[in-house]
Length: 298
Image 1: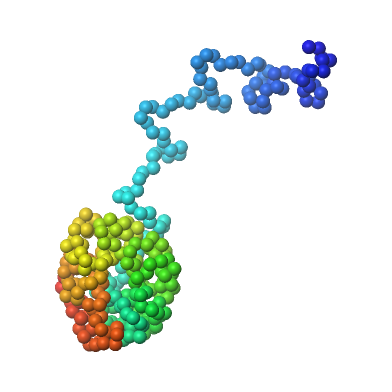
Image 2: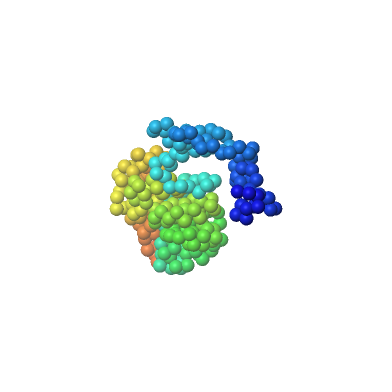
């Protein structure tokens, strides 16, 4: 083909086809002008830069992570992830000292203050309002103003993150749930406030504890009994449990001896006091429960 042949391809700026280097892709390694050679039969092509032939992993060897060279490990015991950088909040001093929590579940807040004052005077200073009592969150600051630092005031029956934020915003010293809710747990832990989610079976108790609970509320405790608590805690050293629900005042010591951190007492303790009943009888029951907890030992 002659240079004047109109079918001949034209290179840049009207030049002819030029050398092999001009026709080769940029950076292809053929810039020397040498024609590309076909690899020998059966040969493995080399990597463009290093020239190293990639080797296959040895049989049965798993590839390692690029940086550390280690395989990721599975979480221990199937634990739920805990909030990064946040620790487990410790129980309050009043709970640890008395080991009894008064659960004040009422139809209204009308008699909450005299009942709370009676309990505190009797020495029972860890009090739990409940969200099933209309106006409980609004009553919390009023109780705080009246009792000062003499009592720890928490809120129970908390079932959502929104409810948890309301309680914490009102100044709750601790939060209690009837079941395990990760969002409630996260709100309390972020605020550094003790949190007691509920559970009944070994799986539920372990899951709540692994998720960062201060202690797990065994609920409803009366349906299983102290032997259930002992059987559940034996395989989980360090697990802290607070049985609540249907426990009688005179059963307090039995639960403590079975391994309870503390015991939550509701209707058996308050009797008719939250409906305007006998406050003197309430004080007597409170002192009886505290004595039973103390006699049960550490």
